[in-house]
Amino acid sequence: QVQLVESGGGLVMPGDSLRLSCAASGSIFVFHTMGWYRQAPGKQRELVAVITSGGTTNYADFVKGRFTISRDNAKNTVYLQMNSLKPEDTAIYYCKAEYGYSGSPTHYSYWGQGTQVTVSS
Image 1 (cartoon, one colour):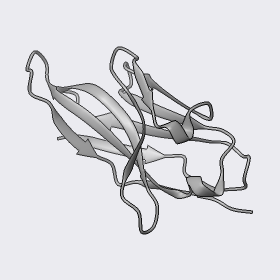
Image 2 (tube, helix red, strand yellow; image 1 turned 180 degrees about the horizontal axis):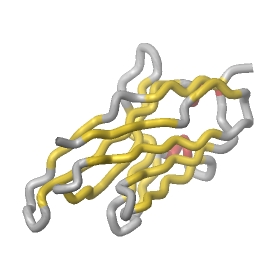
Image 3 (tube, one colour; image 1 turned 30 degrees about the horizontal axis):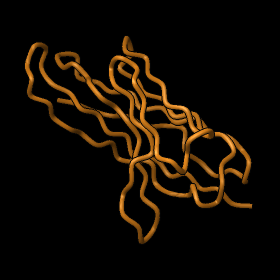
């Protein structure tokens, strides 16, 4: 069974930084693309950044130059370094992992419970 444990959210002021972490467990699985999505009140969930197991990244335009996604494959953990935070970054941030059995082309998706990020003066 897969579990995703997110941490690092909180209340910060505009211009501050936060680092989110998402640790995936499930030792029999191989974790492929992992990433972060966010959902603000009254809005749809949207992609923030994703990273493949090989380190290829993709960012939403609204975070380019401010956020950096990285991962530690040995720990099955993905990070999101968020700098220069703005009030419009306020949202629940969700971790998502694609995983599967070693050698199998079938991938599954799993979502974390989310962590609240609030940017306010």
